[in-house]
Amino acid sequence: MKFKNSVEYAWFLKEILPHVIGISKWKKVCTIAPVSEISTLTDEAFGLVALDNAWDLWSHQAIASNVATVAPAPKAKYTRGGNMKGNKCSGWTDAGIQQFNRFRMAVSDDRKKPHRKQVEADIMRDLRMLVTGKQGTIQGTAEVAAINDLGGEAATGHPLLQDDSVGRSWRV
Image (tube, one colour):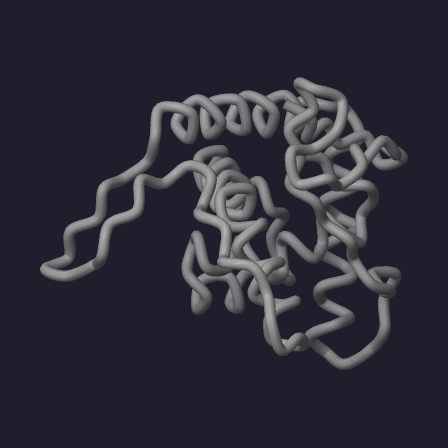
């Protein structure tokens, strides 16, 4: 998975990561501490694999809400299903665990890049502006796609996201 630009990365931070680390914790510290101090490598990697796992299903649900007849919903990529009765789920597939490990390595590598501190400072500043109601540089519509670039095109048909203008390397 790779974010095309900081708008998409900010979307991930605003919409996905808070649910991983806890919304109340996120709200308390997202404007005063960089992401690398708020979340662990594991938190960020889990958010990425959860997004990748459910992207096709969520996309289908968004389309289905606007159309009368649709195809059956796709299954999640990396979970074995289960029915939540008695709190029993079947867990992650081996492919899901491997994808999580690749995302964790990608997050670790990204956090070591020299520009990362500036990217985090910019996003923190923009989140502060959003929280206070003032517009920051994070604006526009984010287009995020879960990709599998082993075959060149994503299994979902999304083109690979190539623009790495802010230096993030989420292609794994």
